Image (tube, rainbow, N blue to C red; front, side, top):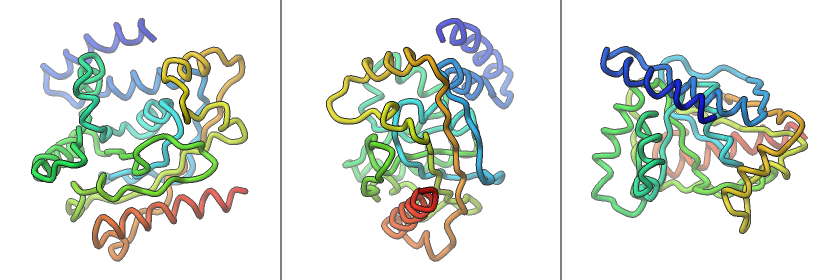
Length: 230
């Protein structure tokens, strides 16, 4: 992983100086997912015209898996911006830092969302606000969708279900488990980690009337896919 980082970072800055479309965050994160043992399959069609992806959240693996599959940037809690190394890595992938309880920042967040969508074509948020066990789905926090109320014109709102299959309990990062412990546990696995990224049907106009309707509709779409697979 360190070697991959050392290769990708200089190339990222070369592409940035030349003002070229920058593939290196996706290359790096997709490579991290594969080094960690994931074997990614894709179901459905990701939107090609720009999409805001609303995904369930199981593990730190979700970020490299989704990025490798779609090239997406991410929405993250503003607290991550206080951690120097994480902030640097996140900013290279056009991460939008959201202050959930600061309504004064909503206008700024909207502009950041639109800029990230322009650069990457996709932006992912985990509306549960934290990781779950992967078997059930926590309530979606509509406050995380404030920058999409209303959605930017021409942008699809697409639910995504990350399915880690029968091994999900061994992957999920829940409870009191420390992040480093989960990271090392996953890297210590001897067998591959199958994960299917299900790009579900985008929400219709009536399902994006406001952020609360959007959160409910996306959660129901993901729940239906989860229940249909059982």
